[in-house]
Length: 406
Image 1: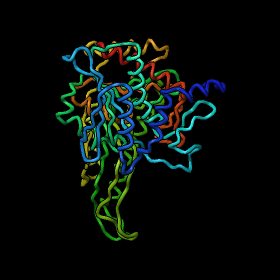
Image 2: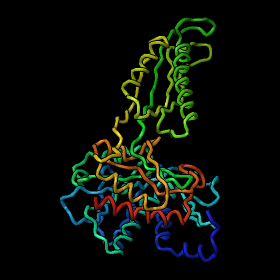
Image 3: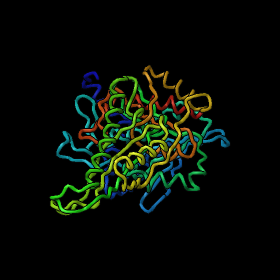
């Protein structure tokens, strides 16, 4: 990124879109125990300046979904949902160069704040794109619903997950949706058409109990070692796939990580049960049912007496089609080709709220127009460059116009 002049910095400082962005970033909608009232007040002011109606739908107590609507010319056509979340993850202020909710604009043009990348930028860029389209006198065929939802960073359980099951969501008549994507550290924009399937797998391993001085057979510890070896061998083989093929991303493989180990009451007592937990993100390129059957087989091979608990399973959701059966893909792709930036399609390594929309069979893409930027999601000193932010508004202007007229 170039070194800006004093005049350029002043221009960014006075830019109305950047002022709006920084105002939103200064709202500390940070977990835990978020009060969303300040976000709602901010969004109400934005809707008023755009002369658009705004609705607040409380999907759960103190969990508001904000809906800003721009009516299209064809009320019979399915609508476009532009989704973003209002919440951000906790911060450690002592590790930040600038206060995390100051939205400080530094001498290089970087705006530092929690949410600058993930994902308050996207929400206000949607609104900036609509402002630009309205200023040009554009009328869109399809109605736009700009959604600002709560609690995505804690899984969306009390936010988008519940909202898509409501009659109010069905009334929105969504035909296509967009949500956050990921940062590109080069000039190749990333478009996510699917997500890996999350499984938090708790293995409850029972075995022979007794005195710690004895070499007992079939202990929980023996079984745990055998099972851990099998899962770590899978981890190594998937890591080799990634290392051997530069075309692959983490979304194309299954990641396996040991995250918890529990058990035992005293150092000289062999426990009757141990629990180990693995965070597994399975690629949709492999049958999840077959993978779960493989885990069951490994439990038997490790000595049996092992119970699997998946907790709250993520649904198995088909990726969005990237062909002629998806009428929004061509216009979306063509609009991005007009940005002078490259593009690549990927399976997202993590999960976002768009999973719940895609589960309904609605085509959806995860996309954030952030490029030439160091990935700082959930990290200290999260920032977005002013020029990248403004360019993102123009990118969304082109994309929204294309898909809303499809």
